Each structure stands twice: as structure tokens, then as C-alpha cells.
Amino acid sequence: MRWPGETVKLWWCSECNSPLLDSLCCRCGGYGFRLGLADPGDARPAFSYDLEVLRKALELESGFNIFDKLISYNSFILLNKLMYIDDMKEVFVNGVKLGNLFYNPVENRWRFRFSYVGAVKALELGFSRVLNVDWMVKRGVSIDASRFSNGDQVIIVFNGEPIAIAYAGRNGKARVLNVFRSKRGDYNTSSRNTSLDDVYRCNSNYIYRLESRACKHIYVSWEKFRKPVVVSYSGGKDSLVSLHLTVSTVGGVQVLFNDTGIELPETVSNVYRVTDSMGLSLVVASAEDAFWRSFSVFGPPGRDYRWCCKICKLIPAARTALKHWPNEALNIVGQRSFESIERSRSPPVWRNEWIPNLICTSPINRWSSLAVWLYIHSRRLDVNKLYFKGFDRIGCFLCPTSRLSEFRNVEETYPELWFKWRSLLVNWAYRIGYGMEWVDLGLWRWLTNTSPKIRIAGKMRIGIKDLSPPLMKWLNPAIVEFKLGDREAYVKLSSKVDSSLILKQYRILGVLSQHDDESITIKGLDYTIKINGLKVGINGNCSILNIADTLGVIYRSLNCVRCSSCIHVCPTNSITINSSISVNEKSCISCRKCLRNCPIASQLVRKIITLLASSQPKNSFKA
Image (spheres, rainbow, N blue to C red):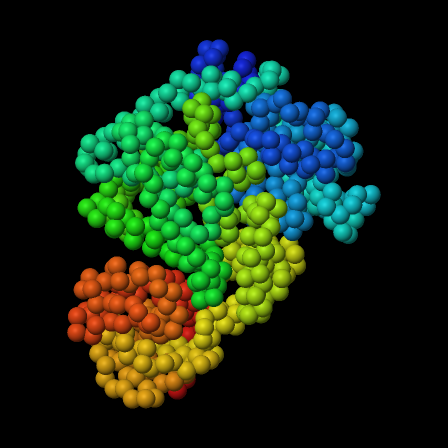
């Protein structure tokens, strides 16, 4: 996928051997050459943990300790994250790209793939896994490589020059994966040692301009809205910089920490330590054990099924914001546009629909990762130590947007936490009929059959099963039958529905037409719903929305996790939650806003029903 917005531009000063945020070096006054970073180019410095990973990966590829000769610990290294099925980073050493460091999820280890310059240097140092050819190979072709072991990286050489990278397979053949199109040689860079202090001196003017613009942005926003200022601090590097800039600009502010209940201990301790050292008032929006309580209802979250954000972040934050800032507040956040495609499209000022009383803005929206790290280093800020233990991002330790490499770090650092999480995944896999590969390869991170999931499964030669049977088991009670027609829909559940629970909420769907101990009939504008024990039938307008809302009422009456989102969003204050959900039939206006905000109805049920409907043949319903 092509990056849609503006990208980071970085240069390299050959004289000072330093990356530059601008083409002009503040230290020597010279101009640097432009680095050819892959989009979005949000490169960061390599830390000691990264160097150790890189050293082991290079030794795996070469069979000997090539790191000290090829790179050495005194080089300045930038890592630029790439789009890949897991974790992959471009490795720039002293301004030159030597290759890509990547985590192979199938082999469960880090690998290193040489670039053209990296291959030239590796051959000079005695890299022996070489195939000499007398023709210009193309990507995808196979070459005899019987003397190499399965998985070995092989440098293809033509007329004494490396032209491609291939990987040996089980069949004695090596498949060409990467042909060097750009054969750019080494730049005339300095071999001098470069520290972060040196890099800051080379970029000090640029950092000063960034800081001045950010502080102006904060002050102008503060003057414009005239609201109390609250800074969202997650314990991550970006929100740390935003917090420091805000305090420097407007003085004492309140700090909002969204404690999801699935944060790592270093993150929680960092939040309390930083706010205490700055003498700031800390407001905690705590989800407590909501994730663990809700798992049995929702199952594992996915990148395409992020119920956890609603339960653990948005609802606690909305509840807390309404309590502390009922008349609105200016919310300073540490969001950067280079973090993701979604954030690159974010406007400079916005409101979250779940937390409308907070006016959000980010003063570091156009900052690069390198700029953030230089600011942290120059101001000696108390940054989360997890960054120096291999974590690229700070947040929920089991987030489905994480990579397997990050999960491996959690498992090694916090084995008890990871065992608790993995046990839940194993039990869920058993429930829906998946094997352990679904757990160990992180296939649970997607509910649907997306491209990365299929690619990972394909590399392990695992056939992705038809998702309809597991999806029907995903809900509790399970769906036994699902049939959909133009004017009729029919759903059969694995256990009876308690009609008394439905009667407490029926007004959301329409008007009660008939009910007895066995069945309930509800009439809407253009449809009729009949719930009879195991069976749910709809006649009339059988849109996916009507089916999902009907089942949403049923499933949330049985599995309510008491998040209270429906209470906060109801425009007529018609909802109460005690032992179950009750809706006042006289004041309810059937707007269904409670269903749109209910994680069970809007995330769980609607997602499953939409997928089931898309897998149904047209007019599959037969009376």
C-alpha cells in the first residue's frame, strides 16, 4: 500500500557522520546528501538492544562474527520501519543502507537481508554463501543450490558483482527474491564516532524551530478555546514530548492517563513518576479488569475487530472526561501523522465521537521519530525504559496491531503475563476448532481472512479454513443456522433466549405486538420480528442492520459487560443497568444510539452477522 501523505525527509552529513532533519548541518555548516528512505521514512536511532539483535542476525546469515567488521558498535545506525507481514526495518549505517533487518514469524527469529552495498561489503569480508552465474537472473527464478542448507541467504554474483539475493529451499534450489536494481556505491562518509549529543548539535537549529512552532500551536489553541488544558499521557515517547512542551508553554496542567488494565508495569510506573516529578495533577481513566472480564464474551480482539479499544479506552475515558471536564477541555495529545495511514489523515483539531467534550490537538503532528528522540535526549526527559528493551511502541501488551517480534519481547520479559494471555487464546482456539498455529503465529490478530493472515498461513502451508463454522461458534449462544433472503431471515441459536430479558429492551426495535411465555413479536416500521425459544425470524426489510440490531439486543441482554456506554449515549435517559439492562418503554424513542455504541451490538454481533451474510448465497432462505 502506498503511503498517502507527506513523508519524512532526512539527509546525512558526510563530514560529521550524522543524520540531518534539514539539508544544512548546524555543526559544520555543510550540506548533506538525501537518504533514500522507504515511505514514510520515520526512522529512529538504533539502541543497544537493536544492535544485539542485528549482531545475532548477521551471524546467522554469514556463519561468523561479521558485525564488528561490517558495522561495529561505534557506527551511528538508523532503523526505518517498513510494511511487512511482521517487523522489518531498513538499516542505515553511517548514511549507507546495508540491508533490511526482519523478523521471520515462521522461523521465529530475526534475519538480515543484504542490500547491494551490504552484499559488496559482505563479499569483501569473506561471505561464503555465493552462487556465480553467467546470466542476469530475474526475480522468482530458481537456481541450483544443493550445497546450501534450507533457508540460507545466497548472494548471486555475475561478472564478480552481486546482482541478487536468493534463498535456498528444501528441494536443493535457491529462489531469487530480490534483484538489485539500484547499484549505488558507498558515499564518502566519515568514519568518526557519532553520539546522540553530536547528532543533536548537527540539528539544534531545526529542533529549536520545531519546538517554537509546537509551543505556539499550544498557546494559540489555549487562547482560542479558553478551556482547561489536559494532556493525554500514555507513558510513550510522543506523549512525553507533548507533555513537556505543554508544561513549558502554559505551566501546570492536568494529565489524563488511560489505564487499560493491560499495560506493562514500566508504563504505569513511568506515568506516575513523570507526573510526580513535574508536580502535575494526574487523572486516571481506569478500565480495571474490564478486558479480562469481557474476553469470554468477545473472544480475542483483532485489527479488524477492535472491541478492546471501546471497552478499555474509549468508554473509561468518556466517563472520566464527563466527570472531570463537563464543560469541555482542550486535550493535548502526542499523535504524529507518520505513525500510521489513519493518523496521516487526521485534521489538526478534532473531537472523538466517543469523547465529544474534549477538543483534541497535537503539537507534534509533523514531527519525525528522530526529532522526538533528539528532543527527549537534549532535554533529558524520563522516557519509558521499554524502548531500550526492544519495544517500538508503548501500549497494551497484547494489542492485535503488535507484531510477533513484540509479543516475543513480552513473553521473554513478562512470562507470567504472557502465559495468562496465551492460556485464554488456547482455550478460545479449542472452542472454535482452530489448531495451535492460530495461536502461535498470531493468526488471531485478524477476524477475517485478510492478506497478511493468508500470507503467514501460506508460509506454514496451513490452509485457511472456511470461517463460517468458527464464526457461528464465536457467539454465545452459538448460531446453529443462518439463512438470509430478500424478505425473510432466519437464525437458530444453540440455546433458548430468556424472553423476560428481551421484554426489558424490546422498545429499541419497535412496538410490542404479542408476547407469551414462549414467543415475542415486535413490529417495526417495515419489518416484523418473532423470537420463539431457539428461533429468531424477521419478515419484511431484512437488511443486515435490522438483523444485527435484533441479535444485538438478544446478545447484549445475555452477555452485558456493564460498560455503561448505552447509559451515557441515550438522549432520553431511558436506560438503567442493574442485574440486567432495562429500557423505559415510555420514554425510549427507538433511535438505537445505544446499539451503535454498545460494544456487543456494534462490534461483536454486527461484525459476525455481516461476515455470515457475505458468505451466504443469494436468496438462500427457503421457508
